Length: 359
Image (cartoon, rainbow, N blue to C red; front, side, top):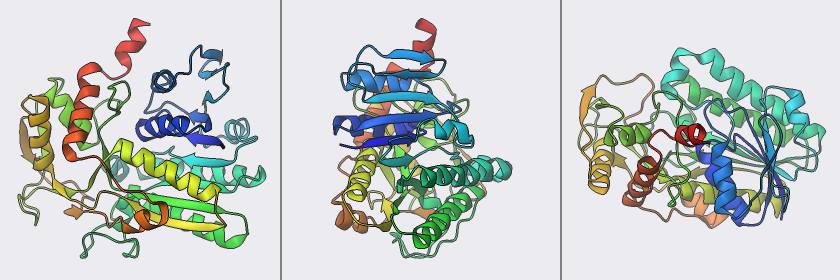
């Protein structure tokens, strides 16, 4: 089993991936600045896999003292000292840390380039210095922009239409340049489509800071009564019901894809993989709204708002390459996504905040 560094491991996708990695027997060092995450997520992950008696070793730092398989460190990928403190003895890195809102990136591009591009460059420099050359990178389908061919294959033109997508495309190019510059690098760029849902236990899920930037947590908060109404950005797209069509993927399927990728890299030769992670099926915004209302038994009021800049009409994956290279496919349905997402929302109406106040 491997010793892995997980950047952004307390976040939505990172925490679910940590759970599956621990279940597979790997040992994890998590680095997170908690800007859009909470350490309670990792405490719950530890509980789900039977790691007890976590010891705080410093503010924002704790470890599992019994089995020594999980430690959490508060730090920033843009700080070389923070990276230096966690890279010793690491076999591979799963890199989730970054900013991820399309709309926010349009208004704050400098921040996105600083965190997503500059932060990744510093991470790669530190990995190189520590002799660690195995990386799974959290990329995005946003690098494709608007495509005529759907489902979208990995060979599609890279033509992002928003700053967020451009930062992801830039990091992919940086990784390609790095792999071509020296031997020993094993890299997988995982281009995911639209992660939603939560762990079936309801103990971990998506807990955005402030107003959610993504559709699924906003729907969840409307269904629970925390927000009055969902804004549907455009009903005049060239789609069956006029609303945007996306390839929604259960976060647990996505987590399993990351595990398949890192295990493939560790056991394989030098390589650069660029893989879509998606279901290959498209659902409209209103499909998701209606499915969530049915599963939760709660109304989800919605109203039409103007289109957002940087949004494509349709984004659906061709995921056959991931199936052939990793042996991975999605297993969970849209109803599973809604059911598990609602279990998380119902049990944690204010995310991890209630747990913090009660402790």
